[in-house]
Length: 551
Image 1: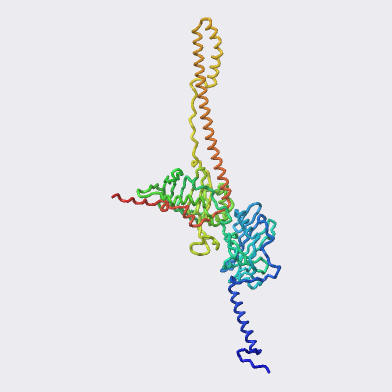
Image 2: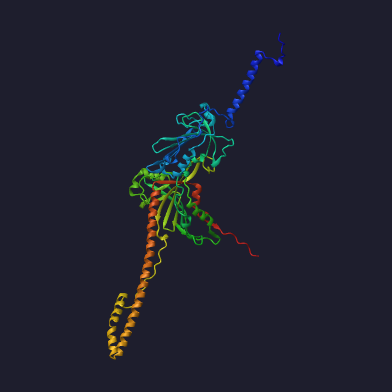
């Protein structure tokens, strides 16, 4: 007979079943905990011999990248936000911004390079059911819904023939420290190749896949140097537009506050007031002077000058057709009701002679080369803010406030320093230099005859000929010196005039090039930029600091 075991060491079937149930419950709890903490999981589910070493082994040459599309998902509105940059007919453009020109070659190459030989650190899961957990659900317009979570960002790179070089869904960031060191701004992310279930953990610098507008455009809008600014005119006014109900004709209501002209001396780095006008309630101008205790706010004016050299735009809109090469309204433009309405909706209105007035004033910038920029400010607007932007809206919302900007350039001859021409000296009285030289030669030809007479004893006549010869030589030398001085002055004047003419010609060409660049677009600047470059009277003038009393 076997000895009977005590209850503490029972091996009966009922005891074994209870033990198995307890272990199973513990495993279920542990598995659930791991599922809700994906960033702490250490899982490798790749079968031996199947493990990938890089994300896209087929992507090897960044120069083959011809387009980049990034699709993100707005959880609150369940809308997709596509962004695309593509090379079209040899020019980079942004289809999401009405094909605005992009400065994309280096940026796109950087995005493609970020995925070339991008190593896989480990494999997280092969289960589609866990895609939401890791934030790698594909932003598919047919599948996303309001309230859906776990939707990732799709990055797609194609070559010039439209072949897909890479399609990656970037999911949540893994907050764990990276063994790879996080070089180059890279952080751990869960990702998967679009069309595949497997989720990887990799290090990525997601800033290379930016959808921020100004990351993809030529940032130097005006292409000017602040140090070359010589004149600034600020027209602080407002204008509203309406339609007369009886006649149907457009009506303009203008309210002017101040108009200031200022000059900048780059040698002394000082500002001076050229002219200041105030306006009454009937828009009648009255010239004003600075009061005894007032001075120009140099810091504000210097900030204006610097802002022009780095004028940032946050959006663009395409202009209607009908604007000439110098960005004035053509005669037929007024008959195009749709174009006129489009212009007025943004705060601009075409008046007689093709001029355009704006709803929120103007700033005119004169450069030393004769190029003059006319910045007209239109109505306010809002622009959807990028969640990745370095400077989100101050109110914490999802839109930035800005103002439409109409830019044009023109040539102002008065800004170019005129050449100082020397007066051309007159020649000596009488014959010109050539005649004087001829006369001297004639006198020399008579010299042998004079010598013959001298040998016969006619010394008086010989001495007279010698005197005439000396006078002729002196006249010739004087005429020659005068002629050389005249030629020098004429040559120097010609060179100065040619330099001036070349400056004028270069400035006129620059105006044409700039207007060609500005022709198709309204720009949008933030309210902050607008306040920097369009100063009212109170902003450009300040009180002088009080001098300490002498003891």
